[in-house]
Structure formats: structure tokens, C-alpha cells
Length: 348
Image 1 (tube, rainbow, N blue to C red):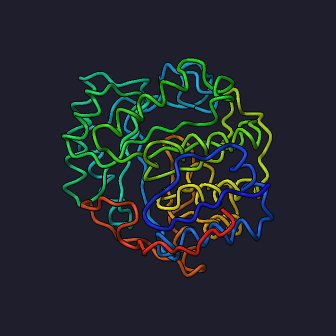
Image 2 (image 1 turned 135 degrees about the vertical axis):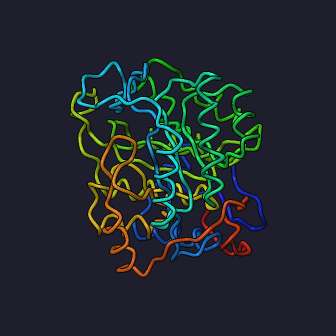
Image 3 (image 1 turned 30 degrees about the vertical axis):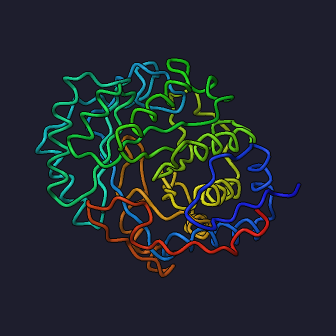
């Protein structure tokens, strides 16, 4: 099919993608798709810089949700050791270590369905402390009310993470304790108070390519593109319903990274969970496809992550460097954004 012309001629980004258009992008010959993604990437970012975030689980396990991929669900029989909310000192020590290792953003995750107002009080203290270290702040705490989103914004939070996980059509096969609409409502509250959004999904849960296209469409057609789009590869955890899910073709993962870059060219596209199982060659292809953000450190909440030394070595081999950004940054492409070209995307 012929793709609708969609050059980023000016500052306008599209929010009206159809599933069929996105499927056509995913179906492109891989070389053509990578070229298109690289072209989009270079409009908004330095292609040789990678933003680095560190993720810390500040409260682990005993979550009442039944997310089929998650070891933290109280409904799944995994070996995960539950842990109460960390102290402020513990979080600050971890944040200092992350900063000293090159991270520019510090993310904190708590296994709650939704926090109580009382839960937010110690988290707000953590946010303020981490900001004082010169780091951007991000939290993922579950569903939020509008009032809670406002409290976090007033506390100085930069980003809120709330993934869509998968397509609305496939969602009920992964999670039954909340609806897809619940996730969109939380994103609405985050966006309404001016918090930056971190939202993406998980690949390899048994979804179809059409589901992957549908998930990307949901993200790209939000009123504002998420400033960060984490793309996770399912980490199969024994005791979870998705432990026996079939492995995803690595090239399909690369295709989704590239499509995310084409659809949301001014957003950070982050390699998230599953990197520990990726070869150096696969990660290199993902960077070529437009990924420009990673989680850095040995763990992502409760699952292993690529070790920091391995990351530094790989980035050096590829000629990539860490992005250095302070907490005052407000525009997802501000440090390296270039004037959009009227000649890009002649085929859509």
C-alpha cells in the first residue's frame, strides 16, 4: 500500500496514525525500515548519544494485580522475596551510585496497584532528595488519581512511568485486574498536570504483529507523544503465566524499535527489560533502529539487566557516548534537536 505523506515539515508531529499504516511500516524490507528510522532519528537527536537511566525497586512484591508477566504479583508463585518500602537513606545511596556511574535519570518503582495518599509522602521525600543530586526523577507507582498526579508534579517530579503493556485487543489476555482504559486514564492525569510521560510496552507475550502495531498506534496517537517510550522484551519468570511464552524473533523486536522511532521521532526510545538476554549485535541493531536510551545497572526492579561494564564496553565499540543532561531539561530533544527537514519521509 502507499503510505500517506507525513514529513515532519515544521514542528508538527502526527497523532492520527492508522493500524494499517503502521503495519505497512513494520512490513518494510528491513534495510528500508532502518534507513527511515535513522533519518527520523537524526532530525531530533544526535545519533551517537545514549541517554542513561537507572531503575530502583523501592517497594518489592505483594502487588494485588495479576499481570501475567510480573514476578511481583501476589497471585503468582515465584521465588521473589517481598520487601517493604526502602528508607530515604537507602534510596539516596543508590541514587548517588547511579549518578557517579553516568546515569542522568533515576527511576523508582513501587509494586502498588495504586498508591494511597499516605504512600506518597515518603516517595515525595525521595523525589526531592534525588533532584538535589542533579538527577532527573521518574517514578512508577501504579494508577494515579488527578490529585495524586498534581502532588507529584508539585514535588518536582519530572517523569511518570505507566506502560500500556500491549494492544487494547490483547490486553485482557495479560491483565484482568485493571482495564486498558484505566491505564489511559492515568496517562491523562499525568499529562494534564504537565508531568512528562514514560510509556511503552512489552513484546513477546504471544501477541501478533497487528497487536504490536495497535499498541504503537495507541502511544503515537496520544495528545502528546510520551517523552520516553520503553520497549521491553518479555523476561520469562518461572511461576508466572507467561513463563512458557514462545521467544520473539529478534528482528521483529528491531522492527518495533524502528517503527516507534518513525512514529514518535522526538521521543526517547528506550531499550528496557530483556537486554540481559540480547546479544551485542542485537543491541547494536536496536541503536541503528533509533533506540537512544537504556536502563543502566545490574537489575530492573526484580529481573537481571545488562551489567554496567558490558554497556560501557559495547557503547565504546560502537562509538556511542552517554548523554549528559541536567534536571532542568524540559524538551525531549532540546539538547540535540535539529531543525526538521522538509525533504524527509517522501514516502510517508
